[in-house]
Image (cartoon, rainbow, N blue to C red; front, side, top):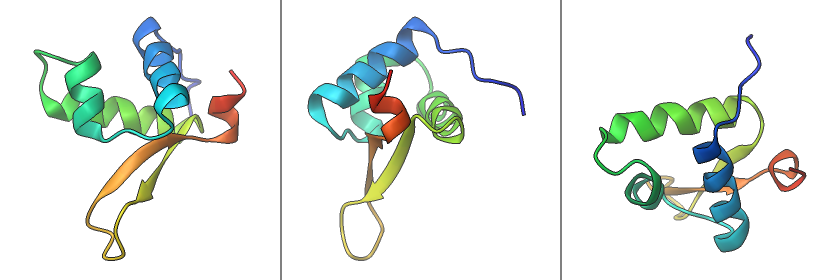
Length: 77
């Protein structure tokens, strides 16, 4: 697997997650991917997740909704 190169936008997303502790994909899309397809944010979030910087956590017992938050690796940047 190729090592992920963090962009300025990635670092801004990680900083926002550090500040707010958790964000929805919609909030990340509105804040950092405005004007782009919502699919674009999910692709990038999955890359950040696969690299170990973020993870998703369910926000209701049914598991139908979730938020993104930092992992220990993400906090360590």
